[in-house]
Length: 109
Image (cartoon, rainbow, N blue to C red; front, top):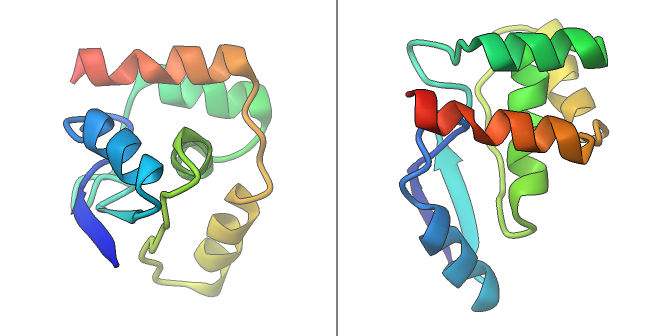
């Protein structure tokens, strides 16, 4: 069983629900984890990506994976290079300071 809803760095309306589902052992699948038809854009996201020397979308995926252990990602891709970038995001460990900075994006949206 899983729950699927619109969720990403900028659209965080399900924060409480994700925590409840995690406690119940239920997976959460965010759709449009990278923003959908309008990719996520934020100065904070761009700065964190530059600091970590990765793409902003890799940072956005890594943030989701670190957000909660019950989050399962199915990001779309249109190329092998993009697929490799998405997979590399799973290995990216964001420092606490980066996570704190990225958490501010939702209040900007």
